[in-house]
Image (cartoon, rainbow over all chains, first blue to last red; front, side):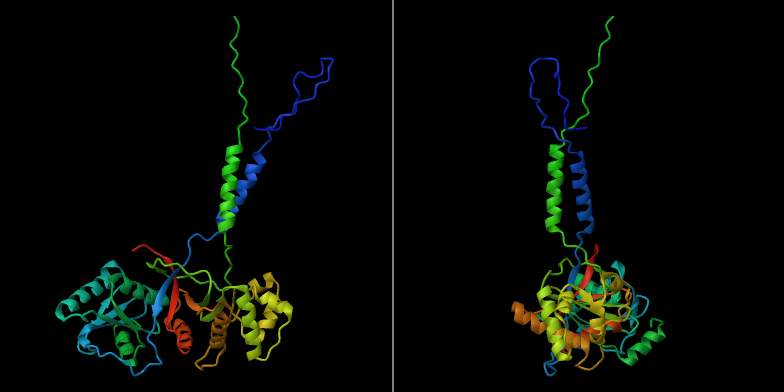
Length: 179
Length: 202
């Protein structure tokens, strides 16, 4: 390996004392070792995968009198039950039987996109977008909640709201075994 | 017959270039490093497809997990002033040493009555301590809302900016725990906040 060369060559015999020419080579192995050790340490301790922030807007509770009239046919109500189960229906509550759905590509995402399309086709513009009313039950996990907002974002739903669930809706969830 | 001598080559390598590269990388990592702070509350963050990253400063994080709420805020100067203000509110006086200690606590979850005791502990003892979380109830004048309120005022006074809030919830936690925090924020008319998530593929 590279090292400091101190063995003077061809010294000693001659009468003249020659000053030794010291080699300028320095053993860098240890230094490189140290450098890589430190690099490893800093790589390990840096958080490369920074956490992501999902923006969330809640309706302003202080302005109670400002309410937009929304036709029931444009709303889709989604209940978040236990065990990652979803129940949803379009329109006024009680008129149609809620459909039980799952998360994932073929679950709620497909539903959201399909229903959104349907509503946009059947309603007159410019305000013909679907409004999703999200009602997480007490047994829904935080993961489901985030997942649902994420699906709404993916499906490109323009408007959604998070609303408290009512006892009647909880009863329905219980009946379907999703609470 | 004369044997052909194989010239012995030196095994010495020129390490200069390698050394240069190594130190260059080292410098880069040292400069970009932000040491991972250990969270007193282990929170398993749910994934989402959002790509927006959490801002580094001017943010308060409310961690929710196992039914406990922890409060964390960035900036040593803000934390220091925040403790002063909270002390005034709860008629508590802190020593300069306690201020100094509080300024380096990124996240905590003890009621203000136990704060002095918590600050007196050393690093190891704090790690072992099972922090009970910041008390929160349905009234408008609970400890969590006061922390939030004072933090906003302090940020506005010191930085002249509106403090942002991020909620770091545990994936397996049930929704009501999260709702409690949102309610505390909403009672102060904070209707926009961020949910901290990790990245997942669509």
